[in-house]
Image 1 (cartoon, one colour):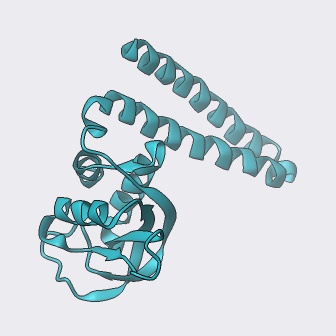
Image 2 (cartoon, rainbow, N blue to C red; image 1 turned 30 degrees about the horizontal axis):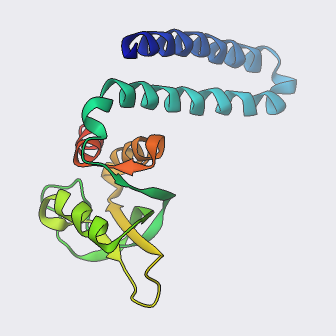
Amino acid sequence: MKNNLINDLKIFKTDMSMMYQRINLMIKKYKEYANPIKGLDGFFETGLISLQNSIEFIEHSDYLQKNSIVFRSRGIGLDYCPGCIFCENDSNEIRLMKNISAFIESKEDGEQIIKWIKDNKGITLDFRVNEPDWIQIKIGSCDKHENKLKKLHQLCMINNTISPEIIQLANNE
């Protein structure tokens, strides 16, 4: 059943790719009307990325959800973080960088996520005793590894979870 779903999604992705190409041809052909059509271009491009991430997630779902923790991302933004989670030799120096900020369900979940990150770099747990229901984790990335951060965000958004396997899959980007 899982393989049938993956095959159906790949066929749909091929169809969507063809539609994306047709939209780009129309943009070139009808230049005077390009602006209203360009929104469709972005729609298909984002949809194709999302579809590919869903396919990858389903292909790896047996182990991606095994040790997962609820992770409700607030998106990618800028904040002060202690280094990049993807750099091998990065210091834990706090600096302004791209990051994922996400709500988690407990302080213990945040501590567990931190344990999954090598040397605990690039990650911060924002737990405030006076706001125990608003717990955030912040994961930082340098500009060089922005694609890995985006991949991590996309994979976490599929099921609103994070796991060591999801982090590793993003790190392989």
